[in-house]
Image 1 (cartoon, rainbow, N blue to C red):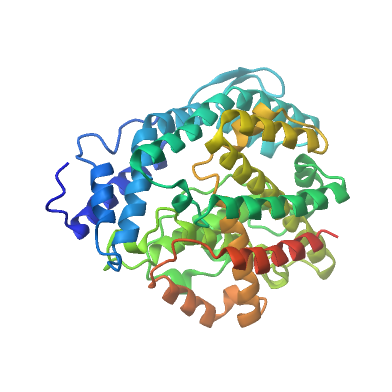
Image 2 (cartoon, rainbow, N blue to C red):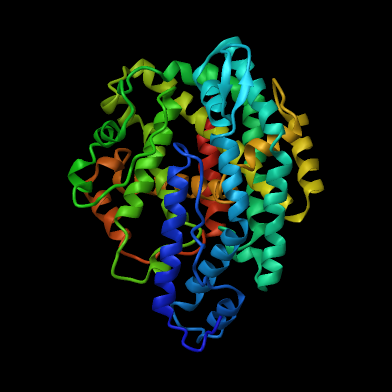
Length: 440
């Protein structure tokens, strides 16, 4: 591709168009089989444009963002057949099941049934989920293992697309979180299944009867400060337990984070390919129910029930931190070799409490997400943000007009490309310890 007329702003618009098309394809996958290719018919930038962008003046504000976006979308272009196949396997491939409920189900439906049932029925669905996940382990290992070859041919370093700017630092953080959460769960004698069954059940009262975008907006009384923004907030999880509300509030936070971004600056500057700010702010809103004012005033729980509800919700977040740390470590191992990832998954399986699943099932379950390396960083950074918000605006920070005003103003700034590793290893791990303390 000729780059003699390289025009950075036009290139930014081209990258935005492809990114938007990718989002549209993914948004439709749950209701219809994935089809189409956002790169079809386009003279899409590749190594030639990548090298040309790196030749731009070092101080040009578009140089770094353009190079990151080209790197990310070259990966996406090469991986698109695999990505679409992964979506088909999750949402559209059907499997005959006999047991709690006879019929033909997708993997996504089996996951939903596992979360929505209880007792022995749930354990059967968990076993079914694990059996189906085992069949996809090799697919996901090969999918993520291809990234190293893509990066090599592009002449790029995989570190620059890590949310900390360094795979080694991400691994370091994941090990620290995993050690803490594993010890906490072991001390309580709980595995992930028991966390859900024993902790979440006790917090089931007080929530709105219906889970939908309007009820979530009303739950955080956000109409007064989101009215000027168009929130695209349609992917609301099914109401199954209080953890469903954590996920729904996170979805609201992501939608609000994206809605307030400036539209008068180049796409590649105000949108990072890692989307770290969006996912961090989504997780920040998902942590709101852990505050005492929310539990007492919004849910109208009695004083005697607030502590138990907070403990239950904290257990859900600790469990997710544990999974996110495992996910980050397995993803890093998969970038090296399938063998290394399998060895690590076997180690995780052998150290698990309660009903174990095989290493292959762990790989199939944890490596199916779109960014296995981002979830942990976003959640820990959100924890730091929640502590800072309470320090600045008190425990009911989400109700504070000054927080709301400053949150909207923050959306007008250019987001950082990476999270601060020292901040996460310091304040972030301190928050993890405080969260674990809430389980006692």
